Length: 210
Length: 91
Image (cartoon, rainbow over all chains, first blue to last red; front, side, top):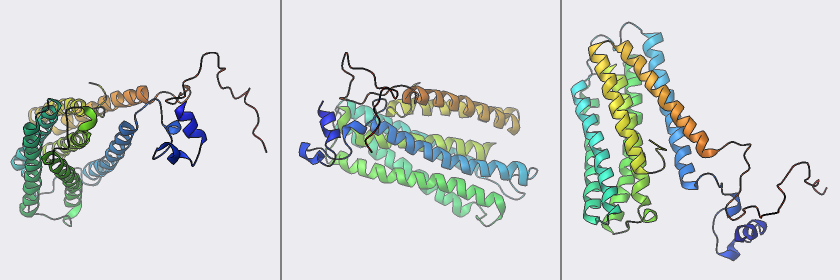
Protein backbone atom coordinates (compact mmCIF):
# COMPACT_ATOMS: atom_id res chain seq x y z
CA UNK A 1 0.00 0.00 0.00
CA UNK A 2 3.01 2.25 -0.40
CA UNK A 3 1.48 3.74 -3.53
CA UNK A 4 -1.69 4.53 -1.69
CA UNK A 5 0.15 6.41 1.00
CA UNK A 6 1.94 8.42 -1.66
CA UNK A 7 -1.35 9.11 -3.40
CA UNK A 8 -3.11 10.21 -0.27
CA UNK A 9 -0.29 12.45 0.79
CA UNK A 10 -0.56 14.97 -2.02
CA UNK A 11 2.31 17.40 -1.78
CA UNK A 12 4.22 15.14 0.56
CA UNK A 13 5.73 12.90 -2.07
CA UNK A 14 9.20 14.20 -1.31
CA UNK A 15 8.86 12.63 2.12
CA UNK A 16 9.20 9.25 0.42
CA UNK A 17 12.09 10.34 -1.77
CA UNK A 18 9.78 10.07 -4.81
CA UNK A 19 9.99 12.52 -7.70
CA UNK A 20 7.42 13.13 -10.42
CA UNK A 21 3.75 12.17 -10.39
CA UNK A 22 2.71 9.73 -7.68
CA UNK A 23 2.46 6.05 -8.62
CA UNK A 24 -1.31 6.13 -8.14
CA UNK A 25 -1.70 8.03 -11.40
CA UNK A 26 0.28 5.54 -13.49
CA UNK A 27 -1.71 3.32 -15.81
CA UNK A 28 -1.67 -0.39 -15.04
CA UNK A 29 -2.26 -1.21 -18.71
CA UNK A 30 0.70 0.40 -20.42
CA UNK A 31 4.22 1.35 -19.46
CA UNK A 32 4.84 5.10 -19.32
CA UNK A 33 7.84 4.94 -21.66
CA UNK A 34 5.92 2.91 -24.25
CA UNK A 35 2.97 5.32 -24.00
CA UNK A 36 5.29 8.28 -24.50
CA UNK A 37 6.90 6.76 -27.60
CA UNK A 38 3.48 5.67 -28.87
CA UNK A 39 2.03 9.20 -28.65
CA UNK A 40 5.16 10.71 -30.19
CA UNK A 41 5.25 8.30 -33.15
CA UNK A 42 1.49 8.67 -33.70
CA UNK A 43 1.82 12.46 -33.84
CA UNK A 44 4.69 12.06 -36.32
CA UNK A 45 2.61 9.72 -38.49
CA UNK A 46 -0.21 12.29 -38.55
CA UNK A 47 2.28 15.01 -39.52
CA UNK A 48 3.59 12.94 -42.43
CA UNK A 49 0.03 11.94 -43.37
CA UNK A 50 -0.88 15.63 -43.77
CA UNK A 51 2.02 16.11 -46.18
CA UNK A 52 1.12 12.96 -48.12
CA UNK A 53 -2.49 14.17 -48.35
CA UNK A 54 -1.21 17.46 -49.81
CA UNK A 55 0.99 15.52 -52.26
CA UNK A 56 -1.83 13.32 -53.57
CA UNK A 57 -4.24 16.27 -53.67
CA UNK A 58 -1.81 18.20 -55.87
CA UNK A 59 -1.06 15.20 -58.02
CA UNK A 60 -4.59 13.90 -58.54
CA UNK A 61 -6.73 17.04 -58.35
CA UNK A 62 -4.56 20.00 -59.31
CA UNK A 63 -2.37 18.58 -62.09
CA UNK A 64 -3.52 15.08 -62.96
CA UNK A 65 -1.93 14.91 -66.43
CA UNK A 66 1.53 16.38 -66.06
CA UNK A 67 3.21 14.88 -63.02
CA UNK A 68 6.04 15.58 -62.62
CA UNK A 69 5.85 18.68 -64.81
CA UNK A 70 7.49 18.61 -68.22
CA UNK A 71 11.24 19.21 -68.03
CA UNK A 72 11.70 17.82 -64.52
CA UNK A 73 13.73 14.62 -64.19
CA UNK A 74 14.02 13.19 -60.70
CA UNK A 75 17.33 11.41 -59.93
CA UNK A 76 15.75 8.03 -59.20
CA UNK A 77 19.05 6.12 -59.21
CA UNK A 78 20.71 8.44 -56.70
CA UNK A 79 17.61 8.38 -54.49
CA UNK A 80 17.61 4.58 -54.74
CA UNK A 81 21.25 4.44 -53.62
CA UNK A 82 20.35 6.82 -50.80
CA UNK A 83 17.53 4.45 -49.80
CA UNK A 84 20.00 1.55 -49.62
CA UNK A 85 22.30 3.70 -47.47
CA UNK A 86 19.51 4.55 -45.03
CA UNK A 87 18.16 0.98 -44.81
CA UNK A 88 21.74 -0.21 -44.19
CA UNK A 89 21.92 2.17 -41.24
CA UNK A 90 18.96 0.34 -39.68
CA UNK A 91 20.94 -2.90 -39.88
CA UNK A 92 23.90 -1.29 -38.14
CA UNK A 93 21.82 0.19 -35.30
CA UNK A 94 20.19 -3.24 -34.88
CA UNK A 95 23.67 -4.78 -34.80
CA UNK A 96 24.76 -2.24 -32.17
CA UNK A 97 21.87 -3.13 -29.89
CA UNK A 98 22.40 -6.87 -30.31
CA UNK A 99 26.08 -6.31 -29.50
CA UNK A 100 25.40 -4.53 -26.21
CA UNK A 101 22.85 -7.19 -25.26
CA UNK A 102 25.76 -9.62 -25.44
CA UNK A 103 28.02 -7.21 -23.51
CA UNK A 104 30.04 -6.47 -26.66
CA UNK A 105 30.99 -2.81 -26.17
CA UNK A 106 33.27 -2.78 -29.21
CA UNK A 107 30.39 -3.94 -31.42
CA UNK A 108 28.12 -1.30 -29.88
CA UNK A 109 30.56 1.49 -30.67
CA UNK A 110 31.18 0.13 -34.17
CA UNK A 111 27.45 -0.23 -34.90
CA UNK A 112 26.52 3.20 -33.57
CA UNK A 113 29.44 4.84 -35.37
CA UNK A 114 28.51 3.18 -38.66
CA UNK A 115 24.87 4.21 -38.20
CA UNK A 116 25.86 7.82 -37.64
CA UNK A 117 28.13 7.81 -40.71
CA UNK A 118 25.46 6.24 -42.92
CA UNK A 119 22.85 8.74 -41.69
CA UNK A 120 25.21 11.65 -42.35
CA UNK A 121 25.96 10.21 -45.80
CA UNK A 122 22.23 10.10 -46.53
CA UNK A 123 21.82 13.75 -45.55
CA UNK A 124 24.90 14.77 -47.56
CA UNK A 125 23.60 13.01 -50.69
CA UNK A 126 20.16 14.56 -50.22
CA UNK A 127 21.56 18.08 -49.87
CA UNK A 128 23.68 17.44 -52.95
CA UNK A 129 20.53 16.32 -54.75
CA UNK A 130 18.76 19.54 -53.75
CA UNK A 131 21.61 21.56 -55.25
CA UNK A 132 21.65 19.72 -58.58
CA UNK A 133 17.98 18.74 -58.99
CA UNK A 134 17.29 21.68 -61.29
CA UNK A 135 14.23 23.21 -59.64
CA UNK A 136 13.41 25.02 -56.42
CA UNK A 137 10.47 25.05 -53.98
CA UNK A 138 9.19 28.14 -55.81
CA UNK A 139 8.87 26.28 -59.11
CA UNK A 140 5.24 25.30 -58.95
CA UNK A 141 3.30 22.91 -56.78
CA UNK A 142 5.54 19.95 -57.62
CA UNK A 143 8.67 21.76 -56.44
CA UNK A 144 6.92 22.87 -53.26
CA UNK A 145 5.62 19.46 -52.25
CA UNK A 146 8.83 17.68 -53.31
CA UNK A 147 11.00 19.87 -51.09
CA UNK A 148 8.39 19.85 -48.30
CA UNK A 149 8.10 16.06 -48.06
CA UNK A 150 11.78 15.24 -48.53
CA UNK A 151 12.77 18.20 -46.35
CA UNK A 152 10.42 17.11 -43.57
CA UNK A 153 12.01 13.69 -43.68
CA UNK A 154 15.50 15.20 -43.83
CA UNK A 155 14.73 17.17 -40.67
CA UNK A 156 13.80 13.89 -38.96
CA UNK A 157 17.07 12.33 -40.10
CA UNK A 158 18.88 15.33 -38.62
CA UNK A 159 17.10 14.85 -35.27
CA UNK A 160 17.94 11.14 -35.43
CA UNK A 161 21.60 12.03 -36.00
CA UNK A 162 21.51 14.24 -32.91
CA UNK A 163 20.11 11.35 -30.85
CA UNK A 164 22.76 9.03 -32.31
CA UNK A 165 25.47 11.57 -31.45
CA UNK A 166 24.43 11.43 -27.79
CA UNK A 167 24.23 7.62 -27.95
CA UNK A 168 27.73 7.48 -29.49
CA UNK A 169 29.19 9.74 -26.82
CA UNK A 170 27.59 7.66 -24.07
CA UNK A 171 28.78 4.44 -25.71
CA UNK A 172 32.40 5.70 -25.74
CA UNK A 173 32.02 6.69 -22.08
CA UNK A 174 30.85 3.16 -21.24
CA UNK A 175 27.35 4.12 -20.07
CA UNK A 176 25.53 1.13 -21.56
CA UNK A 177 25.21 -2.46 -20.35
CA UNK A 178 23.58 -5.74 -21.38
CA UNK A 179 20.48 -5.38 -19.16
CA UNK A 180 17.52 -3.65 -20.80
CA UNK A 181 17.38 -0.77 -18.31
CA UNK A 182 21.04 -0.09 -19.09
CA UNK A 183 20.71 0.31 -22.86
CA UNK A 184 17.45 2.25 -23.23
CA UNK A 185 19.62 5.11 -24.53
CA UNK A 186 20.29 2.97 -27.60
CA UNK A 187 16.92 1.24 -27.84
CA UNK A 188 14.77 4.40 -28.03
CA UNK A 189 16.90 6.15 -30.71
CA UNK A 190 16.90 2.78 -32.53
CA UNK A 191 13.08 2.69 -32.61
CA UNK A 192 13.04 6.30 -33.81
CA UNK A 193 15.65 5.53 -36.49
CA UNK A 194 13.59 2.59 -37.81
CA UNK A 195 10.53 4.86 -37.95
CA UNK A 196 12.52 7.42 -39.96
CA UNK A 197 13.62 4.63 -42.33
CA UNK A 198 10.06 3.39 -42.80
CA UNK A 199 8.92 6.93 -43.58
CA UNK A 200 11.70 7.37 -46.14
CA UNK A 201 10.74 4.14 -47.92
CA UNK A 202 7.17 5.43 -48.25
CA UNK A 203 8.41 8.87 -49.38
CA UNK A 204 10.79 7.31 -51.92
CA UNK A 205 8.19 4.97 -53.41
CA UNK A 206 5.57 7.75 -53.55
CA UNK A 207 7.68 10.54 -55.04
CA UNK A 208 10.32 8.76 -57.12
CA UNK A 209 8.64 5.54 -58.25
CA UNK A 210 4.87 5.97 -58.42
CA UNK B 1 4.87 -9.19 -35.63
CA UNK B 2 3.87 -7.54 -32.39
CA UNK B 3 3.91 -3.99 -31.17
CA UNK B 4 6.64 -2.11 -33.11
CA UNK B 5 7.17 0.24 -30.18
CA UNK B 6 7.79 -2.52 -27.68
CA UNK B 7 11.42 -2.89 -28.59
CA UNK B 8 13.98 -2.00 -31.24
CA UNK B 9 13.92 -5.61 -32.45
CA UNK B 10 10.16 -5.46 -33.05
CA UNK B 11 10.54 -2.14 -34.92
CA UNK B 12 13.29 -3.71 -37.03
CA UNK B 13 10.94 -6.57 -38.03
CA UNK B 14 8.34 -4.00 -39.08
CA UNK B 15 10.97 -2.20 -41.13
CA UNK B 16 11.81 -5.43 -42.95
CA UNK B 17 8.10 -5.98 -43.67
CA UNK B 18 7.82 -2.44 -45.06
CA UNK B 19 10.91 -3.01 -47.24
CA UNK B 20 9.31 -6.21 -48.60
CA UNK B 21 6.03 -4.38 -49.28
CA UNK B 22 7.89 -1.53 -50.99
CA UNK B 23 9.72 -3.97 -53.26
CA UNK B 24 6.38 -5.47 -54.33
CA UNK B 25 4.92 -2.00 -54.98
CA UNK B 26 8.00 -0.99 -57.02
CA UNK B 27 7.75 -4.18 -59.08
CA UNK B 28 4.07 -3.51 -59.77
CA UNK B 29 4.89 0.09 -60.76
CA UNK B 30 7.63 -1.06 -63.16
CA UNK B 31 5.82 -4.06 -64.65
CA UNK B 32 2.22 -2.79 -64.68
CA UNK B 33 1.35 0.84 -63.96
CA UNK B 34 1.70 3.61 -61.41
CA UNK B 35 -2.02 3.55 -60.67
CA UNK B 36 -1.95 -0.17 -59.83
CA UNK B 37 1.11 0.37 -57.65
CA UNK B 38 -0.56 3.28 -55.85
CA UNK B 39 -3.70 1.20 -55.23
CA UNK B 40 -1.62 -1.70 -53.90
CA UNK B 41 0.30 0.72 -51.68
CA UNK B 42 -2.93 2.14 -50.25
CA UNK B 43 -4.28 -1.37 -49.61
CA UNK B 44 -1.08 -2.42 -47.83
CA UNK B 45 -1.08 0.74 -45.69
CA UNK B 46 -4.76 0.20 -44.84
CA UNK B 47 -4.13 -3.43 -43.79
CA UNK B 48 -1.15 -2.40 -41.65
CA UNK B 49 -3.15 0.46 -40.10
CA UNK B 50 -5.96 -1.91 -39.09
CA UNK B 51 -3.39 -4.29 -37.55
CA UNK B 52 -1.73 -1.46 -35.62
CA UNK B 53 -5.03 0.02 -34.40
CA UNK B 54 -6.26 -3.42 -33.25
CA UNK B 55 -2.96 -3.95 -31.45
CA UNK B 56 -3.24 -0.55 -29.76
CA UNK B 57 -6.82 -1.22 -28.65
CA UNK B 58 -5.68 -4.55 -27.22
CA UNK B 59 -2.75 -2.87 -25.48
CA UNK B 60 -4.68 0.06 -24.04
CA UNK B 61 -7.86 -1.85 -23.15
CA UNK B 62 -11.41 -0.58 -23.15
CA UNK B 63 -12.38 2.50 -21.10
CA UNK B 64 -15.18 0.37 -19.65
CA UNK B 65 -12.70 -2.06 -18.15
CA UNK B 66 -11.82 -1.51 -14.52
CA UNK B 67 -8.24 -0.37 -14.15
CA UNK B 68 -6.26 -1.32 -11.09
CA UNK B 69 -3.20 0.81 -10.50
CA UNK B 70 0.11 -0.75 -9.44
CA UNK B 71 0.17 -1.24 -5.69
CA UNK B 72 -3.60 -0.71 -5.46
CA UNK B 73 -4.76 -4.27 -6.22
CA UNK B 74 -8.23 -4.90 -4.87
CA UNK B 75 -8.15 -6.84 -1.60
CA UNK B 76 -10.13 -10.07 -1.39
CA UNK B 77 -13.52 -9.44 0.14
CA UNK B 78 -13.33 -5.72 -0.62
CA UNK B 79 -16.47 -4.63 -2.52
CA UNK B 80 -16.02 -3.41 -6.08
CA UNK B 81 -16.33 0.34 -6.46
CA UNK B 82 -19.76 1.21 -7.80
CA UNK B 83 -21.18 4.58 -8.64
CA UNK B 84 -24.52 3.63 -7.13
CA UNK B 85 -23.05 2.78 -3.72
CA UNK B 86 -20.55 5.63 -3.72
CA UNK B 87 -21.55 8.28 -1.15
CA UNK B 88 -22.17 11.83 -2.28
CA UNK B 89 -19.23 14.16 -1.81
CA UNK B 90 -19.38 16.56 1.07
CA UNK B 91 -20.53 20.06 0.07
